[in-house]
Image (cartoon, rainbow, N blue to C red; front, side, top):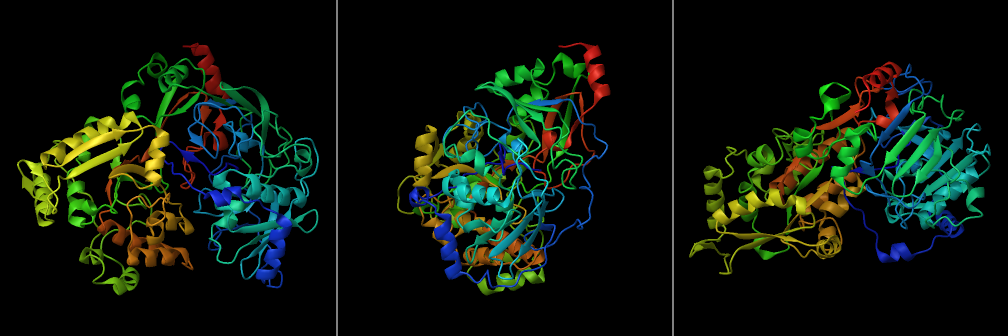
Length: 640
């Protein structure tokens, strides 16, 4: 619940920042002076102080709530939880670490450092984006939404007993904006600055037109000790243990091998409503392995206790070791109810050969997902259809009247199918070479002027139709091979080009590719983050995430409708309308997603029967607890 915004192995996308933004310095006094000159926030009326906030102001829990519904208040404190990294944030790595500063660009930050700090507010994972006060007791927001006044809890302290004040909060936010990791700088670009009005009041000011989710991001950032960093540079990689204020502190570590955290027994926030029933383990430990196979063997040897499995082949074939057979290790598949996002081969429509949507649809028809899933991925995945997959923002069935109201202005500019059921990828017969689908693909290519000459498909200009897939992971060769074979059946000369990660990133940022795989996920409340992925401006900006080169006035307009939605109902409607137009454009060949979290653990734990929908992980560190009876039984059963 205090976790840093994270990306797991199934849900990773990059955020960029221009060189000018990275090089620019940040003077909070200058920024605040600018704010005073350009904003009316100081004069604008403020709403009443509230115990929480969300994008649209809706909160499930009342001011006097005692705990989140999904925690177990009877969970005992104690025991140990150990795992390998399965999520990362900012400068963290899955395989190693060499720094205890996880909020800057330099070094490779240790996993779990977010456990040692506390933010102003924390997420409620049974709501799309609501946050409730931790260090902050309350927040009041100016009517123009450009100033957020946070009132702090007087009992908040750092681990050395020193008080946590508004001056520490202002220092932390201003320092992160000036010297934090580029991902943090990118998210804080609309933050003007923070100022302590007294020891318990801090005001955070935002630029006009700021993205609506930025205040929530800021409220979730870690709070550092101003006094501690008065004697140390913030933006240096270091192995010094920082002074924290969170539920855990660093106990011991060995660089590149492990890091262990111990629970702060008298932590000031333990009995606050957002924290009750959580962070139950006395010890949390991360083990680091350079090799995935070695990491798996480490789990079978009980070198660590919990593992989330991200490789379908391993899940299907290697969980047959003795501890599984005799019940000492349990396997579960916990449902993943969060938005699953978009993963697929994105087609670079900047290139003339891909400008005709009939050509792009033919490329879609040539991919046999059913065969690939069954043969290569052990049937572990479902087909992706939408960038809002697994959420109520995904379009289904016929458009609602509200959707039609948004879509009608573009009739004649967008395909007619936009006003019917949304496009879905075809379902093959699973043979690996569905003749009916390939015949349809061939017809679409002929209709687009791409005919076969001497057994080879040629473009309307007479040049050979060549497709190069760009990738930087050799593990994906098996997934490309059958697709390339089917394209060959259509007469298209397709190939896979494997390059190193540095060259790959350079080529993708320069849009120097035909087709490449990308995965990204929108939040439960998408907003400003839509622009770099889908808009015409992004299509013309090198280094943007609009890999397909989408340049559609209708999509541009619908992105603005999403960003400016005044309620969650309006947001959902705008997202569904956008989804219909995006899917009709055939900008990608959708791939797959998992509908669950496959996990294995030594049977010494227990967890809530039903995990909250928006957790985005299995919540092992936050919500699980040690079961003493199970641990004793496991010890009696003996070690593997």
